Length: 200
Image (cartoon, rainbow, N blue to C red):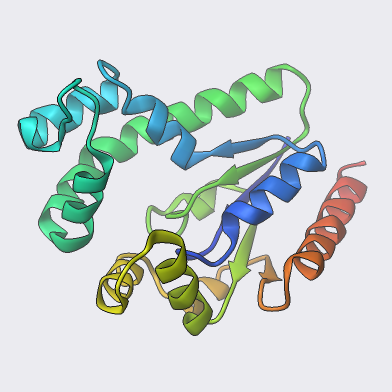
């Protein structure tokens, strides 16, 4: 089976690429979706966060207050490190469980959508790395518009990941998301065609 690691930066367009890949019939294992499953009330991730942070990150119904949690993670580096320490091993287990299931059902190409692919050293576990590129100015503008953030808060969030320019050095292929969706989709189609051709 061929494993592709898909990554990028905040608001670079990685989720858009992931959607295009799915529409092309290639399965995507999404780290963010795995996190959300693990953080459902009573699940392993929820229990780990409750033990670490207590009631301060819970809503009245017991579910996670994701807005408050995100605010703490992006403003408190020690809290972010502690949360990553307990959650990341659980996320990795969930991702590989999904990969094994897809392999068992006959899939020969799987894309792993992982925002922190390089930061967590997971790029060594895939056959190819696709990095979605946007300029720092575009990232900032898109993040402010998407999340309704002020510029200083958006900039602070961007600093929690490696700069995109640093990720380019580890990329097998770069998807340029500076010229619109049609051009981005064309690049994805070309890479998938080449990947399927090599696999065949």
